[in-house]
Image (cartoon, rainbow, N blue to C red; front, side, top):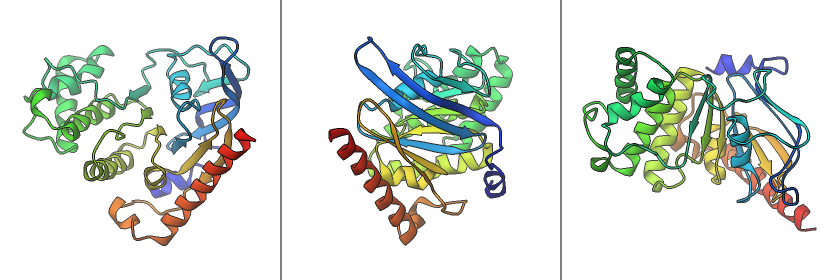
Length: 268
């Protein structure tokens, strides 16, 4: 995976290309302004910024859930985004599990919506539940699972679909600190094994540094990009080991400085 990411140079194929993108929902409230963002295939990029700056809007544009009606353009692998694209997986902050389905059935659901044969979907979902540490819980309903276990099911469902691009909107934001660290480590391991491109929204700067190849900092609304920071920490990574790494903390401080700068420029 380290070699794969190092090979993603400037001429690598783009998973997402956002060029001079501006967007207004009602013709008067501008959400995004002049955004330029390129996500290379196999790259993990995090978006950080104040609430309401347009981070989730960018994800929704990439997923085809919000039509692009403003200036500039957004493309996925060279084409305009479309809703339900088979190569795009979207994981929300909430697990969104169906309470009447077992963990296995929930993990199968995304594949079944996309027409994967039941036997194949069941086999892959079973393998992914094992991979996320839920072996033995396949027949358990969500009400009998902890919040962290439910998010593991959601991770299994997302990765089981085999999409080459993952959009993740604060998937660990509602978890307690210990569970969050465990799932960040799990996410790092899954991304290392499956090599998807990831656009990840978070308000947690430490999380952004820990999981990303690059962190993009946005200003308050209208959202603009004020910094694009390469995270030159070696992979594979351990979330716990990073807490003792001085360079990890230096990158955190650098991001915080850019975030504060984005606020002050916007207010000025």
